[in-house]
Length: 160
Image (cartoon, rainbow, N blue to C red; front, side, top):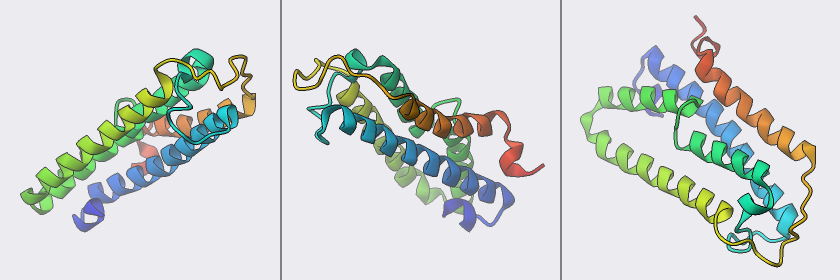
């Protein structure tokens, strides 16, 4: 909304970039949660602990998704958040504090989510000889490739 309300083309590009990356990353997070559910048959975070010991390939994909979610480079979220924070300060300086708090809380949430699921002792109720279906890795990778591609080729959004 901040990019659109700034009424400048830069704000519209930032809004488009954040919508694309938001849609791809949230879908990837839900797909990753589904993979954890299929491994443990539970949605509880404490039961899904120790994923990096059991399935390191899914753990690295979780890390990439969470890092892109907090706007770490190279992700589409980074450039989109920079553009949108700049555009929102054009409207008024009063938005700096709320936007800063929101960005910080989102980063803490993503890092906490990654840490709880991937680190710690493996749950003995989970099967340690878990096999991952290649389709699951392809689904998550298919979500992450456009997020990284947009930062490499920003003309996909800016159209010039």
